[in-house]
Length: 283
Image (cartoon, rainbow, N blue to C red; front, side, top):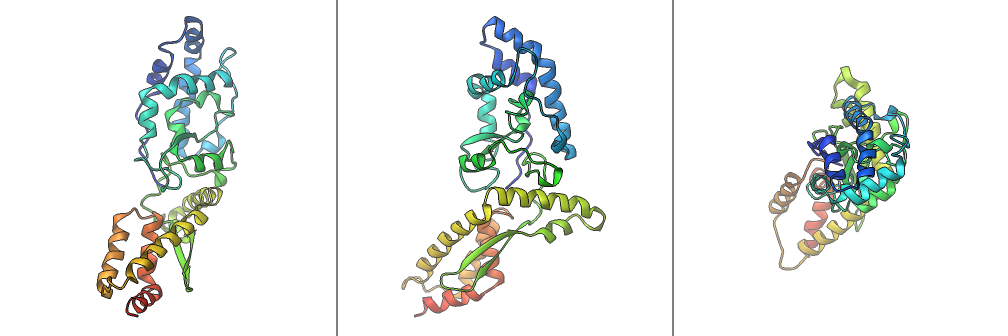
């Protein structure tokens, strides 16, 4: 999970682009729906900034002429052809905003379009994700606030080291990744414990719903296998300080909560693996 900037395109500009080439009757129906769509989009941003999306009203239609089906068709047939769609797609720097590992492959409606029709083409409701994370979320609408998933546009998580790991001292070693709840709460200080608990709960909800712990453990096993193969090669023979320097470089190269940075930070903190790696390399 990582933050991305809130999209700057307005709902007015999006709607104008979407209906530009429509037949007159359809265009007029959407123009009549403009006030409701614009109002709900603006309310959505306000609710997101206030952390109150859990109470946003569900609506399966916009007006008598524009229902869920018409909004879904607008998204599929018009919005996806606009430059706004492409801009949102690239908003996560090419990486899924949920797992932060796989490439962006689609846009996910944070509040599902099947239950929130007016928000179907609201930019702030569209998150760049991979297919796996999008499919795992599906159209689930959690409540209350403690079970809401992280919103990359509104929940500030990049500067809080919420991801942690430990490993089983075996051969090969096995990593377990988890949400460091106390660390999240402590980041808010004694006067905002409640806010810290809410954010920690949202991180945990997203982490478990998308099986990120299991996913990162698999990636860690692949990384450890590569390390073993490289450093245990007869021609490697690198001294401990050089290996530690490489590990530290990996920590600094990635974001605080990227699984690989956490992996190398853990290996530096607990030197059991490094000691065994050095023994293997000198055999």
